[in-house]
Length: 161
Image (tube, rainbow, N blue to C red; front, side, top):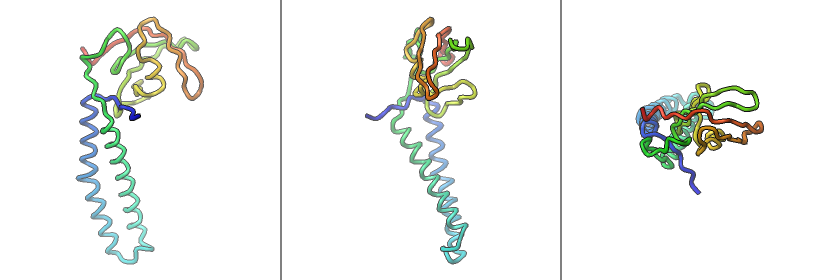
């Protein structure tokens, strides 16, 4: 089964622009650099040629990865979200019950994640564990380092005004 990748229209557009930049600017430049390096002579000992070919492969892999995510994209319309429970786009205030520490977590889609600023992918273990919870609910979440337990204190949807 293909796993859908939830994202906003803005994140989708940003990813599309990134692909266009890589395909229409970066890849042609690399092709030019490969041609110049090839003109230098013996390809067996031409480090510049091999470096550019490797770079070309890495950029192509990145293009393929982004296109794969875009093909599985599920554009989320914030106006269709039930704001009584945690869903895509929610800014959630939780308390880690083990250490009595309050955290603010925003559930975002692919391309918008920034764990240092509390923006977690909705498909991450924490994102999945919080989905559907309401204020006052306890979320028991399995993470690679063990188990977390969050109590939901507040749910906001900043995108909805």
